[in-house]
Image (cartoon, rainbow, N blue to C red; front, side):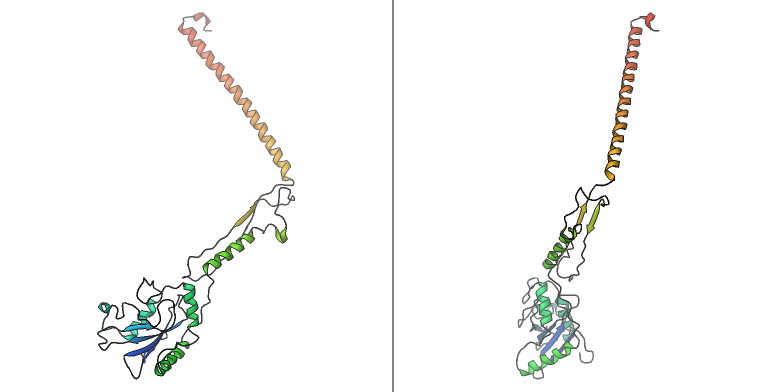
Length: 284
């Protein structure tokens, strides 16, 4: 670990007890833990590496309890999963990967809201936790200073999803008043001749939200006002009158055609009747 240091973690053993290690890890990127520095303690068994170590977090984080041995597949709670080829470095990499996973009710796990975890991540940078005797504290402080030089900038804290939804609702309701600026009333049927027909307004707001904060909700509304007025009214009345005249003429033509068809059918029936009864003289 000293010959190949990492920017994501650091761990050192106590001089008086080589089986006890102090460590610190950075919160995984693209998660609510990003930007946080999380200190902890590793206790190696006397049979290490043939038996797994135990892990304890010292920094409040919202994912694991502090000063409590946590249950992981790489810890002494599951010795059946441990492999002697794994090292402290391997265990710290695995611990970082476990941070954003679902607790699932495991021993020593917590399930804080993501907003609270983000606040704890930012607060963890302020100072190293206080734990143990002077030697332990000096080691913790040394590790904390090293991690401060590696930690990225604090990500911007996003507003909760409920507040974003409320803001979107307010901005969308303001879009309904776009046709009536300065508090004027919306257009009515007595609008001026140059009033637009089918005037629509849309107000769409894009909000960037932390990917882990929940479902992104973006709302928009469209206000539509349709008015008539000015020179368009006489033209509309004239067009309606022409349509009515054409319809009346078509009705009369259909009526006369129906009468002619009826007379022809009656004539054919009379001719057939006379022929069947032998009244030949009347055929012409």
